[in-house]
Amino acid sequence: MLTVALAGKPNAGKSTFFSAATEADAEVGNYPFTTIDPNRGVTAVRTKCPCRDRDERCGNDRCFDGKRYVPVELVDVAGLVPGAHEGRGLGNQFLDALTDADAIVNVIDAAGATNAEGEPVDIGSADPTEEIVFIESELDAWFQDILDRNWEGVTRRSRAPDFDLEETLLEVCTGFGGDAAAVTAVLRTLEYPADPIAWEDDHRRALAEGLRAQSKPIVVAANKADLAPEDLLEAVLTADDSAVPTTAAGELALRRAVERGAISYDPGDDDFSIVGDLTDEQAAGLERIRDTMTKHGGTGVQTSLNTAVYELLDHITVYPVENETRWTDADGNMLPDAVLVPTGSTPRDLAFEIHTDIGEGYLHAVDARSNRRISDQHELTEGDVIKIVSTAT
Image (cartoon, rainbow, N blue to C red; front, top):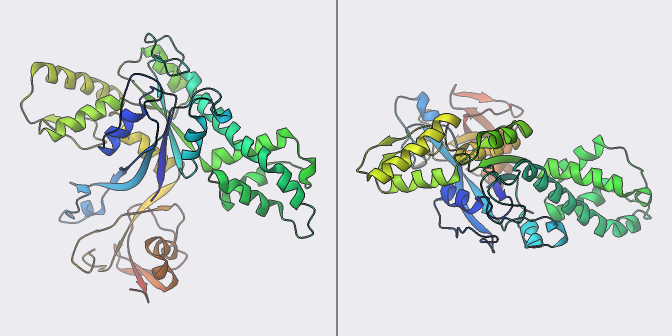
């Protein structure tokens, strides 16, 4: 399962985002370091279910009238303060918790209502654009610290006749979630001495920044968009044109209203319908949320998660089935599973994603939409329904 981490300074709304996205309890408070130990839960990205192309809906408990929700892990870690990579605040704990994250949602306070330490200030008093580069710079510095601490070992190993720089750096970089593809891709973009003894700080810094961008891509959730002065929110969206206007508090309120039977709403919708009784105060609060949703196309929580998985990580959703005609498993359940795989994945890659034994016993695959056998080199696309034929099935 892919892992998305919530990063940001204290009191920016990470725990509210976590509670809204996972529908799990997380301590929320108007003071720094509300979160001490990382909160872990399961959220989902949203996509179109292939059942919409059939005469009937699949009935899967993660499909709501053709809106399919695919599970991913969500981690809410301790707030980050300046100097976190040097251990300030809960810096070491925060950064260690990010090691296994595939992507990061940087939750910033777009209302400018908290200072750099996460302490409450008047709305508009702080500059939220600083939070965008702040998270990146702390992560870059963390990566470089790990490289610096391990560089003496790299130089010692370089004296061996069979020394391989990429292989050695890969061993170092696994300490913060790097993989072979990321290390190789970054090294190809850099100019550096073949002898690690000749490397200087600038070389390691460039490697650290490249590895962070490759292994920990970041989407900015411009939180508290409902409270943000127009000029501040516009400044954030100008500083990062991929930033997502977000109201985590609004999403949490909507989900709680759904639980009470007060409204009809699916995460990621750009509107909701009132279906139950509300007090005047509740109705007014929901209308304020509706105004924000109308302005920004939703609450931004689902959009942030979808951006992290489908755009930054460049994944697609594929649906393995056993019966290519009915699109069912052995028990007759239609479209029982949805699997996230990187763009460019093949049927054999999907087989290994399902289970190692199925991958090792892979024979061929069938495109259930066309009911035709496809080649082993065929690149899967979003919404494909695939039957894997394997000696293990």
